[in-house]
Image (cartoon, rainbow, N blue to C red):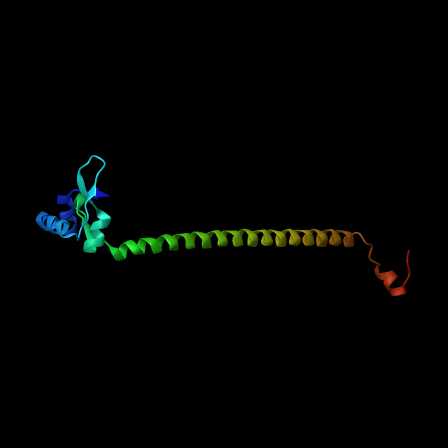
Length: 137
C-alpha cells in the first residue's frame, strides 16, 4: 500500500522532516503513484525501519519484518494443516466403511443364528418313554 510522506512518518513514529532526510539520503525509496504524485510503499517502510504502526481507528497494529516472515510460514503451516485434515477425513471415511462392513456381517450372523434357532424349535424331541425304552411311537 502506498501512503503519503506524512502518513509514512506517522506509521514509523518519526517526523515528516526526518522522512524527507531519509528519502534524500537514499534510506527510503519513493514510489510514483498512478496519478503522478509521490508516496512511500509500506513494505519500503518496513524494510527501512523494521516496523510500522497502523494508528487508524484508534487501534495500534505493529507490523515488523519478523511478523511478515511469520505470515509466509503461517501460509505454509495452513497448507500443511489443510493437507493433514484432508488425509484424516480420508482415513475417517475408510474407518466408517470398515465399521459398516463389520456391522453388516454381525447382522448376517444374527440372522443366521435366529433362523437356526427357529429350525431347532421345530425338531421333535423324544419324549420320556422314548428316552427310557429307546422306542419311537
